[in-house]
Structure formats: structure tokens, C-alpha cells
Amino acid sequence: MNGSNRTFLRPRGFGIHRHWWSILPALPERTDTPAYRALKRVWADHTMNTITVDADGQGSSRGSRGVYRTDTEDHLTVSLFESWAAMPDASWVPTLLAACGAPSEGDVRRVGWSYAFEEVKGMGIADVVVGYEDDGGLAVVVIEAKKPGAAILADKDLAPDCPYFDLPSIRPLQRKTSCFLVDHADATDVRAKVGGRAVLTWQQLVGLQIGAAIRLAVPPTVRAFVVGSLLHHAAGLGIVPDPLPYGWLAQEPAADRIHKDAVRQPREDRIQAYWKQWRHVPGAPGSGGMGA
Image (cartoon, rainbow, N blue to C red; front, side, top):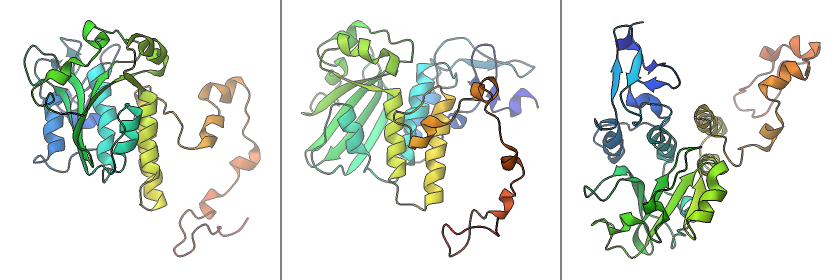
């Protein structure tokens, strides 16, 4: 397969996606939507995305930014946060707001978000801005994302107030909150440096998304697929949700234990005719198979 047909390119040290849509588990259905326009802000930014492909189909990047590179903060932020787009309504928003130190006032009626929000040149770029409307009116949360293992705080991060609060569209709002999004290993250090500003971990973010998926009013099989998809997607980015969606997962052996610790599969497991144990029986949820 030549480079023009590949969706994923593998240079040394990190992966490169050839298409922006391959980085996301939740896609816009059309291009005339706020979701598509918000995503285009990051995937179409020629100053961050500097991907080239040679004649052999090998990908490379002239810079160290952009959503197409799997080792960047840009990629992690967009590919994980956008999973919220899989939720059918705004019922998940109060949980996220509380985790960001911004408890909602009554019901949240609508929500939207921007990536890499640069309203005024020279005033910086906000990683994620979440706007929402509840019983108290319009409010925002500004999220400053830090890649795991690279939670280096700049002067703007150490300021008492978030500098993005002075952006023209945010300044008039009475309710505005900022939050840091960091790896769990960096959270204690970041909390000590930023005073009372909220700190959310990547692991908690995915845990909140999976918690929202578990509460979806959909058939159990669809719910299990959404939960599994979110877990799989996050794990592929090196993020294990906190908490895990099912308690039994924490007891499952890791791959290196299967051989090293001699966790032997009994012959009884090998000879079971699992094809006789029906997974779907119309009209009889949970019924057994054809027999032992």
C-alpha cells in the first residue's frame, strides 16, 4: 500500500495519522456543525501541523506540534476530550464542571467547546474553552492541558487568575473558572504550585466519560460497546481511566503474568464449546445455551 492510501504512518518514536478523522472515536455527522468547525480549528492549522510523506510512504514532521502526531499535547487533548461528543445531551456536564472546580447552578441546558482558542493575537492560546448555560446563565471553564511527563508550568500558569479571562468574549462573564488537566503522576506537584486553581487528571477525565457512558439510556450491548470503545481509545494513548468501569478489571492479569507467573489455562477451558452458549437469545435475556 503506498503512502497516499495509508491512514496511519509510523516514523521512529511516534505515530503519525494521515487523516484527522482517524484520531477520534466520535465524529461529526456533517461538516455544517459546530463540532466539525471546532475540530477544523486544530486539524487545519498549518502552523502546528507540518506533516510530510516521502515517496516510500514514510511520514515525518518538521515540528513537534499538531494533532496528527501521537506524541503531542495537541493530539492527546483533542482525541480524548472530543469523546464527550458521543454523549447525546448535556447531562454529563455538571460532573465535569464539579471536577474542574466550577459547580453548575441547576440544570445545564447546553454546552459547547473550542480547541486552541486564539481570539486575540499575542494573548496566548487556550487549550480548551468550555462554554455552558445553566440556571445561572452563561459561564465558561478554561482548561490548560499538560502532556503526561511534561507538566512544565509557565508564568501564565502561575498567575493568580487565568490570563484568558481577559479575552474579549470571556471578560464580560461573571462566572469563569480555570482548570489544569495533567497526568496523575504530575497532579500533586501542579496542585502545590497553582494554589487554589482546580487540577483534573487525564485519568479522571476518561473515568468521567466512561461514567457518563454507563448511564446512557441505551440497550446494554450498545452501552458495553461505548464503554469498551472509550476504554480502548484511552488505553491506546497511555491513559488508564480512574476509576476503571468495572471492578473486576483491576483483578485481571497483565500480559507478562500469563507466561512469567505460569498462569496456566486449564484444559477444561480449551475444550469448551462456547459456540453452544448463546450470547443473544431473542425474547429470553440471560438464558443459557444448548446444554453442558
